[in-house]
Amino acid sequence: MVAPYYVLEFPDFVHVLAIDRSDRVVLVRQYRHGLRGMSLELPGGMMDQAETDILGAAARELREETGFVGGALSYVITLSPEPARYENRLHLVRATDLSVGATSPEATEDIEVLLVPRQEAMRLALSGAIAHAAHVGLLLIGLNAPA
Image (cartoon, rainbow, N blue to C red; front, side, top):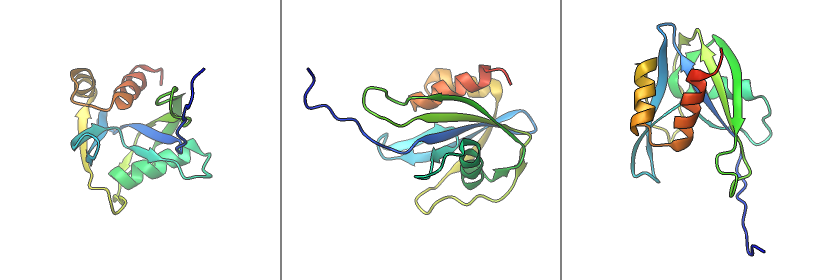
C-alpha cells in the first residue's frame, strides 16, 4: 500500500518540431526558474483548459513564440511527461513549409529563436545542450519519425 500518494494535475502540453524552408530546426532559448538559467527547447507550451485541438494549439504556440506561421502541421505522438506523478500528456506536432511572421510572446516570456541544421539539432540533443529531457526525446522522435 502506498499512502499518501499524490498525482499532480496539469493541462496537456504541445511541442512543435518546426522545420523551416531551409531544412533548419526551430528552437527557442528562454530562462527557466528550476534550471536557474537558460534552456534550449522546442517551441510549445500549455494547452488551454478546454482545448482539444492539438494542431491548433501547436500553431498558436509556434506563432506566439517564434513568429513562424502557415505550412503543414502533422501530429506525431503523445507521451506522458512523468507517468508516476503527472496525469497530463505531451503532444508532439511536426510543422514544415513555414513562413516568418511576428512573434507575440506572453508578458513573462523572453524568448530567443534559433535556427539550426538538423544534424546540429541532433548534436545539441545528444550532448546535453538541450537540458529538458522531454524535449530531447521529442526532438529525437520527431527527427526520426516518418514524415
